[in-house]
Length: 186
Image (cartoon, rainbow, N blue to C red; front, side, top):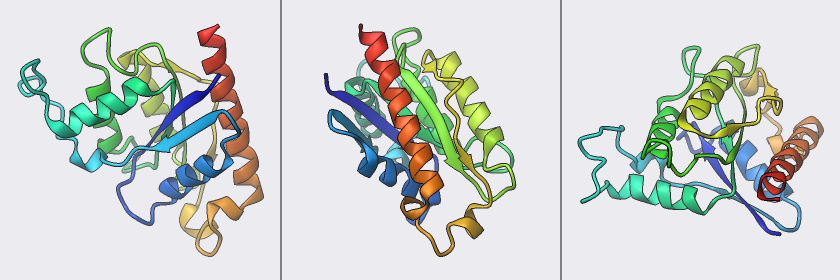
């Protein structure tokens, strides 16, 4: 069975360490697991029920929903902005939660991991993302956690993909998400 995992990165910055973690996850995916980093979160307008209508959902939101609909599971990579979840990631969750009870994320396994500059590695934001995803209908893998503190220092001269702890942690996260996906399909 092939497993499709959609990765959403909560930082839009080209040199984002969370983007680098997501790209490393793509490289670490074993045979039969396809991880795709979603491009285009910057093109998704802020959620507004007035524009989420059957006659025409905005193109950016429609593309996000389509990609999410084709995914079997999700990996969210979240930095921490002012102690909480980045707006772009929260906005994606809001769009994926609709229509209520039947959104593209509904019932699918979701793991939230990441890195941040602070001493806790973004755990507050990651916890908030887990909360939002659960309310949105995703099956949050609460026991799958991975955060790397002090990202600006830790990854200043080392790419996350060259860090043995990162590689080991991401490999385990991918295995657990894949196992949850195949268990849900069984």
